[in-house]
Length: 251
Ligand SMILES: O=P(O)(O)O[C@H]1O[C@H](CO)[C@@H](O)[C@H]1O
Ligand SMILES: O=c1cc[nH]c(=O)[nH]1
Image (tube, rainbow, N blue to C red; front, top):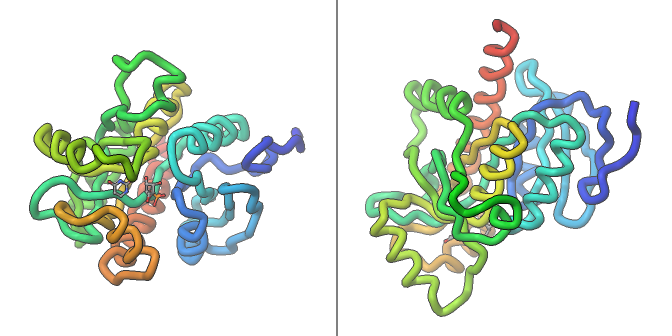
């Protein structure tokens, strides 16, 4: 077995796990860990904190990506190198469309590539799309679960504090985009290029007319609706992997 550690995530290739949850924030790894049976702490190097455990018979790795495309792409590359086949991002986002509430889930079907990382890999005409099988499983689960959510296109961006942020949000709201984050496009493009199964479930922490920094601050402080949204997204992601694994066993 190859015991060589990946340079950044510091994990070896013999973990024997095929599915990974990918939050941005290392603190979310701890909260996802609470859903796992026999959880084992693995590594905390730079922004990459990892734990592994079982969810109702399915082995799952949880590892943080940090903020933005570059650190996410490094995580995806190294996860692919250790045999990860499926990744579900469990991130936070700003809502763009009227009526969306804190703690609602956005299940990204595709992402606007308004960032740089995915362009370092492939021309901007290449689409950033989620894996259809994962989306179908999520649709089946959410059809029967009480969990405020919507499927739609998100926008991934690189900046947070420029003078153009409000204008950009207004522009993309007009194009029907439902949420904004910073990693989904890189995940979808790399996942597509590498033939991995990838999806992204985002928890709304900034209301449609809210100030991004204020929403993020309140989420960090433990605001109740956004914490419930986080619990919902973790449960949905884990249940999706469990059902996917069952489907694979059956075929
Ligand atoms: O909460 P995470 O998963 O980090 O996601 C969102 O939060 C960060 C910005 O506050 C960005 O990484 C954005 O994509
Ligand atoms: O617009 C937003 C709001 C929250 N988080 C993001 O990444 N973008």
